[in-house]
Length: 85
Image (cartoon, rainbow, N blue to C red; front, side, top):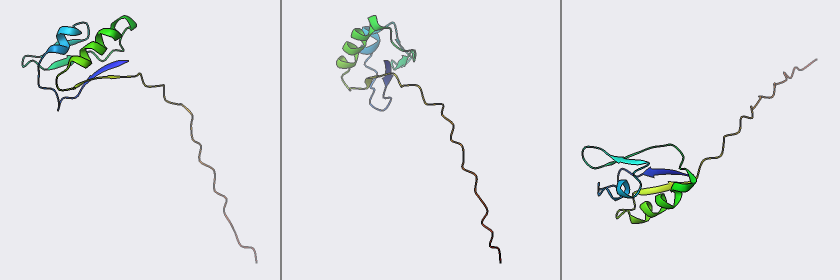
């Protein structure tokens, strides 16, 4: 699980940094700077509380992305069609 901030919705209230200081700090204007590392399981409850407390709903929790498949797509060779007369 990862924490993300929607910068359009965020109004720099700073509640997220108060509730989850392990992953969120504030810049000079009060906007959050989020550590993009996956959350440790013991921080997930704090992250959920921080997301629920955001007055503009700008803080979101995202499930980890499954690894992308490394399957290669090999093009099928084309056969030339020649007309024999």
